[in-house]
Length: 158
Image (cartoon, rainbow, N blue to C red):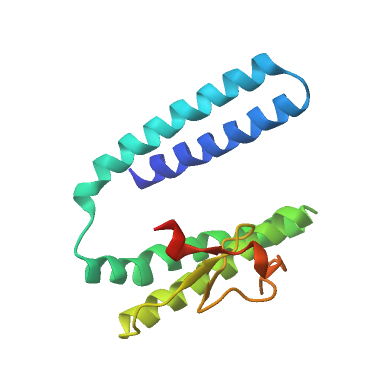
């Protein structure tokens, strides 16, 4: 189920990109179709997510799953893809995948800290790569170099 959900989410994101590209190229009919298809995929994502709700355990168990299986699994799958992209001469793709690995490692660190009894922290999100900073936004993102003023205060999002 999780694989289907992930592929549906990816399809929705790609369709949104297709819509933006079609609009930029002056293709309103294609843009409208791609936007509608993306919205349809998002409905499916919400529906599939609802089906997974019964599979969500207690908070401590969820934290264990996150640090023991989910994030390590993501990192394990992404790491070889970085090398494949680099070997294929797809430097930009390799860089993006490498940044995703760095972000996932950081998420694991934050989850482990919480599991070890760390208190509530303020989180700041880099809108470019997904890096999470604690306390306050940095001057620049340590992963992608984005300016700290672009970071989003996650307390305002919740």
